[in-house]
Length: 310
Image 1 (cartoon, helix red, strand yellow):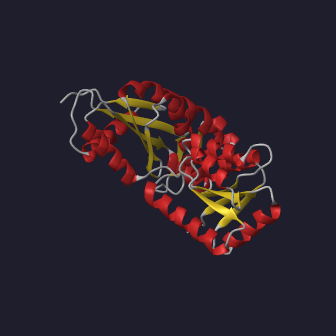
Image 2 (cartoon, helix red, strand yellow):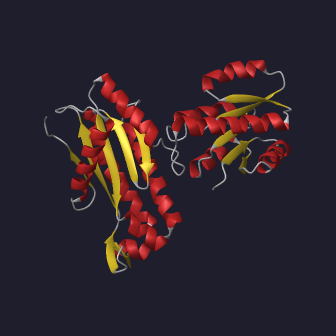
Image 3 (tube, helix red, strand yellow):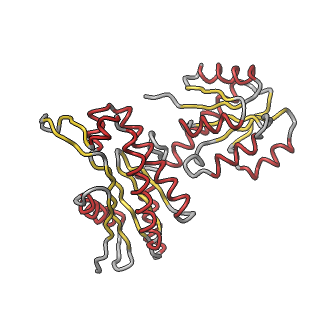
């Protein structure tokens, strides 16, 4: 089981190292940053499971770092514990608008810090049932989101996204590089939704190379087109140059037969209730799986929208 990752941001190196020693002693993987800009760069490279953030930083303040994290929908779920000077009640009041999850006052007790870290990590995992690779919500939150759509009786569209030739990539290059494909795909989806989707759109990762988006019918075409465009631009860069230029990789299929597999593509099946009525999340999922199969029959990346009526 992989260790939970914690990023400690504090310009006082002796405090940062003290926190690091305490948390590594509890079995966590700890990374240090000494200013806001460097911290944000590390967060985007490898998102941590929790951030411990000093309010008083050079240049970009702890408040600003917290706001940047909260404004990024791919990072907003990360719990943030702020470190404040003893008696700085005003810091806590001001900081409420930046939405940290907790405060710890310096100098702190080792037992208190560890207890708060463990509490927030447990709560976050329970709250979002996150996929461990992308930190996106998984099956339970997805089912709950679909049930809300059905209860509200308003127009919705559910996008089922799947990658073709992903297993061949994994087999050829290893699971570590396959994980990079999954994280990159998640980042593409998050970026497009942030730029072109609705504020309340749901993005989920239900395992492997399967993703889900819940949005409104008016957003379907622009979201699908932009996701496909960005995927087809970025994913080929994850192949070795020789394979990318050739347009395929050579590896074994499921029957241990040597085969040529084209570069990965993304297929999207879109379910809407514009012309038909659904009664359960399972029914929506069945139609989505069917449409995704049709989309995979297209050459290259593509999407199929269900326009059938009841």
